Image (cartoon, rainbow, N blue to C red; front, top):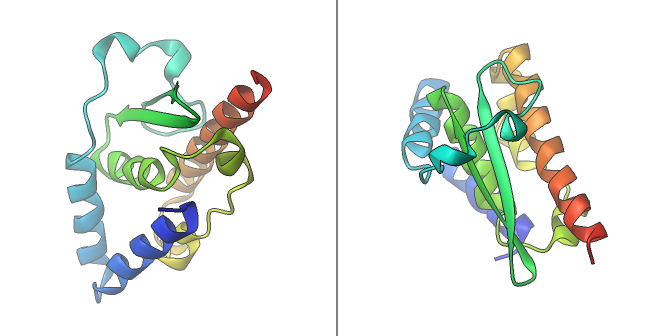
Length: 139
């Protein structure tokens, strides 16, 4: 599945909900489904700067693709990062670096997140793209 197909799928899922209380509940459910993050990876080097809650992010390469792993202390943030992982993980560094991530705007996240959470979300996206650029340069 392409990055845009994954984004469109998330947009369709959010269209099933009529109000933001249901959408937040869905984000919380996504947070609960986030795969475990190795405890030894919860280091200062893997903390994303600019997030209100602590968020750890790591990436590794499998064949030509980048695989992201993340965790957070805040369940809402876990749900947000889970969506980002769903969209970006498993793609090449080049695809990730040039991806136009429009799904957060389309589902209305920018209007419903506190400014600090929006800043944290932007920091997560920036870090994922930085990993992609770094892995691109290694080739």
